[in-house]
Image 1 (cartoon, rainbow, N blue to C red):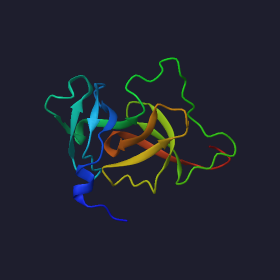
Image 2 (cartoon, rainbow, N blue to C red):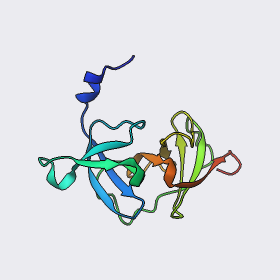
Image 3 (tube, rainbow, N blue to C red):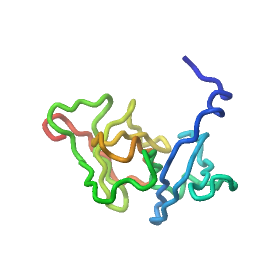
Image 4 (cartoon, one colour):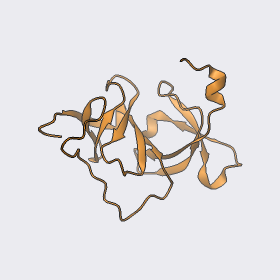
Length: 149
């Protein structure tokens, strides 16, 4: 079923943590995110009634859709798949330009020519529900197979 633009405008705000390539982090809510646009607006978590902030995709590393803004600092996220775990989509290892490595699966496919791609983390207990990985912040992507993932 296709949704109209009006339906998307009425969607609930999504809780995100935005990470810039320079290391800066911003937490807030987005309501009209489109992976095909080169910007979006973020409503800061600490000033929900204030004006939204313009965010340029060109400056971003990734947009993390999170369960909560704080997570669990003691939690060690599993960056691999357990034997028998078979997520839909491709299993990938994404290495960012800053050296961080993320393992997850794509919703549909991964195309480095797109502005970015959504990845679902390998660890189902991760605070990150899904991550929009900005292509310009990625150093390399490797597909994982059952024997290596």
